[in-house]
Length: 110
Image (cartoon, rainbow, N blue to C red; front, side, top):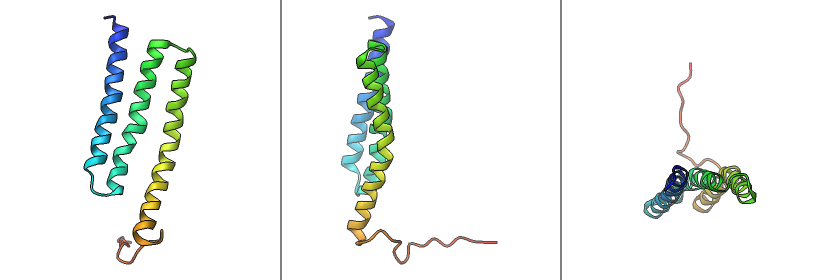
């Protein structure tokens, strides 16, 4: 196997491994807020490594450019989707988005 093939295989193993670990994390966490933390790796690290593997294998062909575009879309939309999901979970839990009594953190001022 060539060094290029080894690099492609290693990048794919990392991408698939991170996605699998993220899925396991989502399954074992107790609530939606904890689960959201595990989704970020699946939408940041995995697409970047898989896009990099495609770029190494295909170069700047149509497939390579499309893989980079998909990775960029996932990187841009992940924070928005995570925030919207957390907000929906909070509204479902408390009926509103506002700070609830007892949640205020007192800060010591000068």
